[in-house]
Image 1: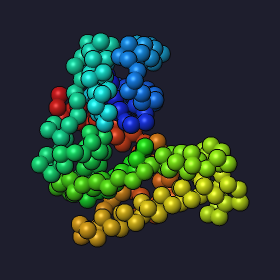
Image 2 (image 1 turned 90 degrees about the horizontal axis):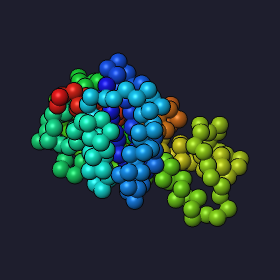
Image 3 (image 1 turned 135 degrees about the vertical axis):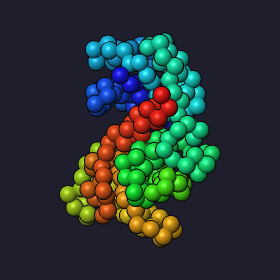
Image 4 (image 1 turned 90 degrees about the vertical axis):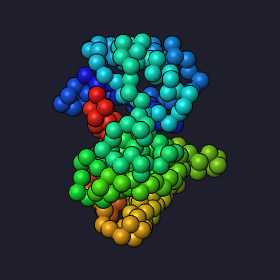
Length: 252
């Protein structure tokens, strides 16, 4: 059993893999002010509900430095295992020298999974999380780099936060491009707008690298926005987790 942790700026994704698939996954709020004991109590409760099957391996990706060591300690305290902390120096299946020094471990996991899934193609990964990230890897495993924009929910919160009359908005598939209510109008503008941004970025990447690419869409809202993007080859919510599992296997 593998315990995987993906610590993002807004959410922490925890998941268990039994060798065949992801059997359990949870999403909790990222809060750097919480103590190790508080996280310990919550995660211990989640694991207990899953049957208390202790994993024998753990892998952690973190873009929140203050929580990296917290979860390293938690893995040892909960399961007695030293987790693998993902960084550019591990075996990933990518050309390590091509990985930018500042690239986040979640993006490295995305590209590792993309290259393993489509090894004969140049691949763009569109990850719709707190930020929208666009990363690209070649068929040789060369990492071209990344582009980062505000995420879907981040944009909605910024818009609603600056406008007192706007209610909270659930990002579901728009029924029309031209909305008849404030909620529908924002929903359309955000989702179709980001779909257009994604399409534009894919075209620009292809022009820059001089090759056609395959497109993978992931992130919490991938099932909602994925069908609105013109060119999508794979929609996979667990893509980052799959990359963590791959890296854990390559470094076992």
